[in-house]
Length: 309
Image (cartoon, rainbow, N blue to C red; front, side, top):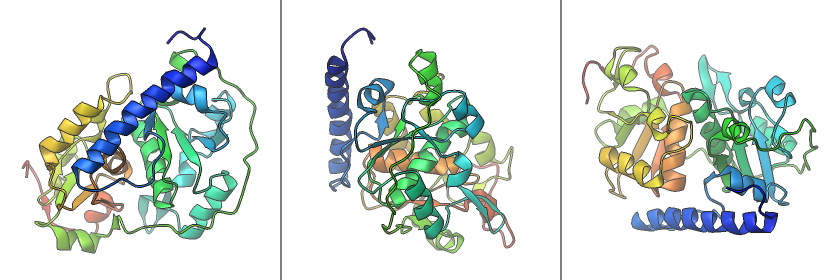
């Protein structure tokens, strides 16, 4: 994009981009027989879109990098809420949802309301950091913040494209967050045990983990759909058509089928949950937050190793 164009031109360009992406998302949802939730912004936004819309009254940019990284320079208007605040250790598990009370407190101090348009920003040098952004987006959506998006390419792309950074720290406009936290799409180990052979279980880890070269194999009957494959080499997302083909090739498009996604500790699983539900139109997707970390604890659930099924 030519950065010499006016901001109004940029807004028009990104509005076309938004319409195209949102139309595709709506079409996906209708394909599966259901109107999507009240989303009025695309689930994945470009740097152009964010640059043109960052000053919007409802827009909240959340930078989940470390405080030290944030302090060195961040997107203007972005607040810093590090990843460690969004996923906690609990009952010996590494990456769990905060309690309802803790999550409401976090959203309140972040200046996030149910009506906010939230954009999550993180580094994208590694597969794990790329997935962290969608983990936070998933958490916000469970809290009822339906218009939560991730920045395509994250902070890394923003810097690579030589866009403006600042060290000024905005003060969030805080209002107590009182909405319900909907955990109905979060499943337990016992629920997984009861759904083997019934639900489509997706393992979002890399093939070496799934097959059992590392980390002991996979949940019995699970299919492998590696989360890192949704990205291009530069950390940007693949084209929506490719993402849909990847998902359809493994899951199919039966709107009545329940899908359960898991990974090692809950990061990669949140990535596919986000893409399936917010971009691709799947409507019955659940996430096993304990994931393989909990599955293999005593008493361990059934595991398949050295097998692709």
